[in-house]
Amino acid sequence: MFKTIIAAIDGSDPSAKALEMACDLAKMSGAELHLVHSPQLETTTIAVGYAAVEIPITPEHIREAGQKVMDKAIERATERGVTPSGSTIGTGDATDDILNTAKLHDADLIVMGRRGLGSLASLFLGSVSQKVSHGATCSCLTVHH
Image 1: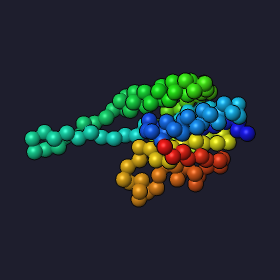
Image 2: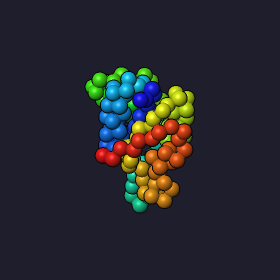
Image 3: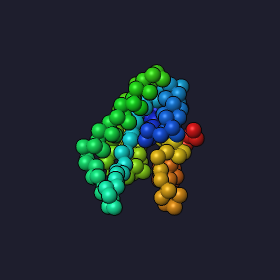
Image 4: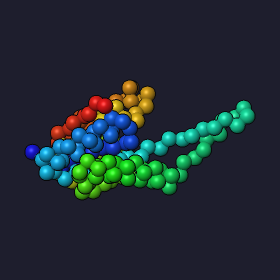
């Protein structure tokens, strides 16, 4: 059925459901499961008197946060009886990271949540799942939570 499944994770509930589905499919088909996560930079602003001060987030903070999400996903997959064959923590655009990971591993299925941590901008620019489905050369499964 499937040889290589890519599960795109972002720490959201839809992403967790997608990971569960990817694990189930990997077990049923004997496929390898590869996880991919793209930490997204978000700034934090605090009010100080009448001014707003932006607190910069360092690349190290982003790496640490991304690793926490990945570690939790690996733990969840293992609890479901699947040991991921690999994991990728991207550094750029989530769509590009997912598509590049799928291409690199010759994936025949990408599984992702239908709505993850997207913002209001995704309503105007399109969601990651829509962009991945459009750009993928393999099958895509979007999972609603």
